[in-house]
Image (cartoon, rainbow, N blue to C red; front, side, top):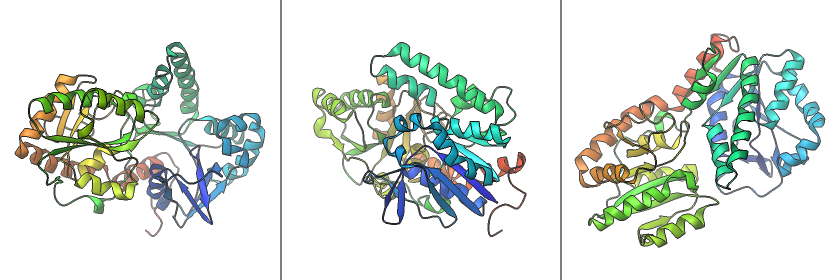
Length: 397
């Protein structure tokens, strides 16, 4: 069987090899074994390959590059929708399963083609994109425009979901928005690690300082200001700690300035973006993983940290509570923007090494529920249930 996989995430080319976002490559690694062939329809950019990108090396995946006007992202594509639809048309027609990854401009065109061809299709959505869209506008002071954009985007996606034969969502918010009275919606937690990647022992810095790790993107809505303020209070109490930021982003300067103004810059290490293959060594060199974000869907980085033997402190957003982190068992869940609660949770784990180890061990065990093998089994069951795969669909079975 053939899968036509459509995504807006761009690839770069170096020689005969293609590279893209590590999360997308992992997604392809997860789903490709379910099909004989995968036609990957994506924009290919001529820009240099970002250092955090991963190589696409999956035997049955054939990359079908979109026309070169994609290299400047959406602006050029908006001028040539018919040309882009002409490019997508034969790939969609040949596919036994049409999978659109995220509701974006290109997926809208693919959706229209599926309607014209009377073709059944699958939509996959991740994160909490309505809130992310709104927050993006909010950060630039365009509150009203952010609300309007999120509202219109949600209406369009609701129309796409209503006409899809199967919608797979990763975030709890998306399930709440689109899952009401929708028997064709399934929630599946995405993963980036295999069962064999789960550590056999808990992590630890082997240092007098307790290392707190944040991994992700340097954005204002990630709660790093609250983390810094909580850390300042703990340092004033005499606790020894250090914050590692395995991340990069457009707000690096403001975030660094905040640490300087609070007087804790000497306790904050900006590691930059760490390749996913090397990130496990960063996890293993730390003691506590912290994600004090204002909004999330179902962040993959938290089960990743748990699978490497770290106790976690996260905010009560998205699917973090109960779905991923069990409050008081595998870590602590605190309210967003609540510095005292964040400080108290961190203090407990810093001071009580036995508690930290017990939560890390419980997290290791829980992380087995969020492997790529588990994700593949859930996706396979959903595809079979809605007639996109026969019962014995995985190649080699």
